[in-house]
Amino acid sequence: KAGVTQTPRYLIKTRGQQVTLSCSPISGHRSVSWYQQTPGQGLQFLFEYFSETQRNKGNFPGRFSGRQFSNSRSEMNVSTLELGDSALYLCASSPGQAYLYGYTFGSGTRLTVV
Amino acid sequence: AQSVSQHNHHVILSEAASLELGCNYSYGGTVNLFWYVQYPGQHLQLLLKYFSGDPLVKGIKGFEAEFIKSKFSFNLRKPSVQWSDTAEYFCAVNSGGYQKVTFGTGTKLQVIP
Image (cartoon, rainbow over all chains, first blue to last red; front, side):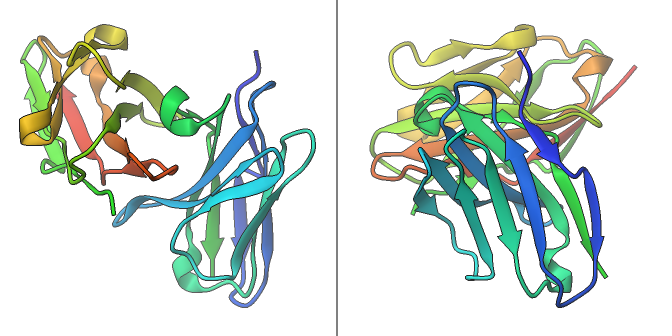
């Protein structure tokens, strides 16, 4: 079956702009989580959605937001981009509780803010 | 808050050497533990997971990990590494009361032929 699909793979944006990243989970997976990966900080949890509801949120500013649609697809939005937002953004899906099933990760969207 | 420490940031081994990567977590209650691997140019993949029962967990590609509750540790082991094991390895934990999974900062393993 198809894996977790993230689009686009690469993005270059200017400071102050906003960006929307997309994630299509594995069919049947209802939980979608987002992580920010940087060389210095590793994987930092952004948020998790389950059945269109945000179930958990990490310690990121309000500029980072997300949503999940009825087909479990999820989008993540970052407004007023800063240079420090440059990172690999990973989407991970799970059939249910991620801490019970483990994640299936996508390949990520590499965001560069200039 | 739950946290995970991976003390080795970069490990270099020769093929056929034995591997042990350290992972320590902070929470003292019930935990779920994971090891993920990221091969060069590929996405993160689940290697193995521990929820309960036998503290020695076997995963894919010959990897295993041992949960030692008294040491708050979940070290990853492999008796004999191959060049194809070159990758970055992440330990992750979920502890009681938290729904999110917290990752360590990763250990880069380089296997020299």
